[in-house]
Image (cartoon, rainbow, N blue to C red):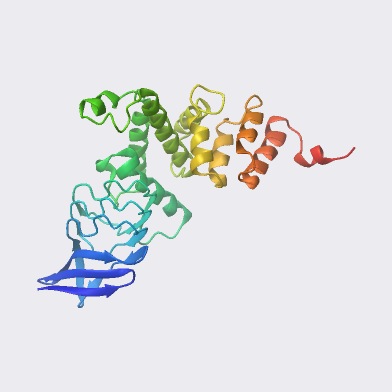
Length: 298
């Protein structure tokens, strides 16, 4: 017999299966839900397929510590979903669990309690959508040296992939109405690469120096004044007031004497604190002069 339970952030329909509980579906009434570890004193071990399909207002979800299986498309099309908390164990995972969850940023372990764990969560969050690498979606391994190496290998493969790869396939599949123009396709592909470069540089746990340089080089080749300005577009238009991105931007050598004026002009009156950061960086790192010396009346 299917039963219902009210929880923080919504209501659940569940079924007792022997000595375990399966969550069949959920109705979300808030932006955050916490799925219980037990119901009727029995462990919650499975989320049925499509259980939270298309819950458009859902932004954060905590999965049960007792979970063993997540069905197909459980959170597919949850277009506002940003953060997921998962148990640190091997799970049986269905297809397309986070399909079209384009805003997902972090998939953290339930016991995450350090800056390093937060970084690992950001990297794992990139796996289902940004990297499209199902073989890396292994919460029980995320953060281990071997997993980080495999993550970086996949990222290298993506960065070195020709930008035009995939366009012809989209056209053949009848998707030319989505990206009909090759230039638009290439611009978005370069932004996708820049997003991942920033992500890895900011969350640099286990990052080798050689690959750090490769990531920085890609961004430097796509800054203001280059044929592609993908790096600046990602920083300014998508992370306008987040200093971590400006720090990675300048650290990669993207702010130069020759593009400094153009960058500040484009910022206009937006994000004055970040604009001040770029001014200080130029005076201290590019010109070698203390910023406050510029304000002196002498």
